[in-house]
Image (cartoon, rainbow, N blue to C red; front, side, top):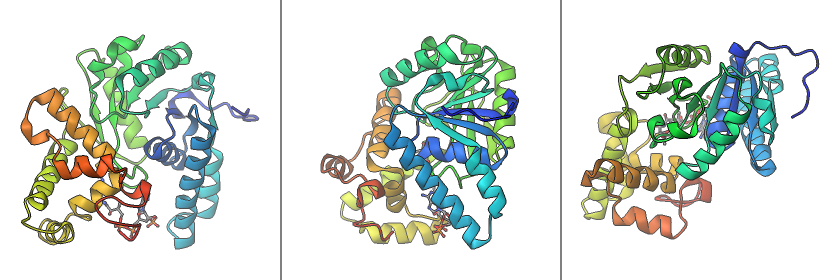
Length: 295
Ligand code: 3HC
């Protein structure tokens, strides 16, 4: 992690994000836009380069469109430092973990995070399917650990779900809510953990229902999206949205929902399984329910 000459930024306005996928990197740049000093950490240099380039392109497009001041853009870009060393966690008041949705990987990452995090830092997992109580034993200070869940694309979607587990201290919840507001998001606080939290709980059951209708031959993918956009006012239909989120991610959320709730509504339908098996994962592979990028 390169040094930052003269930068003595207080921990309250310092964020570390571990995991530089689309979510982690957009969370990092969102916080940088709101004045946070951000350290983005990934084990992969390629990931970091790609994350930086994608987010930089999004911010520069805002400048071109006149929705972001050029100086503010440059300042935000300059506030994000990237690297693979966890010692960059020192001095961060807030840490967001946004690595793969895999308990073992997350546990390993928490062991490393807890070896370097400040004793006062709060740690939020961006996991959508693993409540923090399922990971809590891997964390040194569970009282400062909870779910802080963002939505895709994180630079745009306003909602952040703040979900305390039974181990989470009230002060941690308050700090997580303050952090979300400080980076320009609208937080909602859940009273307790529940699979899918709020938005995904509603969304993915609806997405599954759309897939069942298409699979049953009642309607095409295109017309189902058209119907949902025009009747329900969704900005994207369920299939276009699934392509944006990633079909592997959708499948994993549904699998985990079925595993955790036993409710058959979560069990992924065949057409989704088939597309994932073919490697058609949505936008990131250039096609999912829709072919190509023209979505
Ligand atoms: N990442 C970042 N920015 C993006 C983007 C992306 N993938 N796609 C579009 N944008 C930006 C554009 O750059 C543009 O920004 P600008 O105005 O600053 O230049 C802005 O979005 C508008 O773009 P468009 O006019 O091309 O597109 P839309 O008007 O359709 O808006 C959208 C795009 C905001 C993504 C909108 O379609 C939308 O709200 N879709 C629904 C998204 C949604 O439901 N997300 C939740 C998914 S579930 C989830 O995340 C849970 C997790 O656990 C899996």
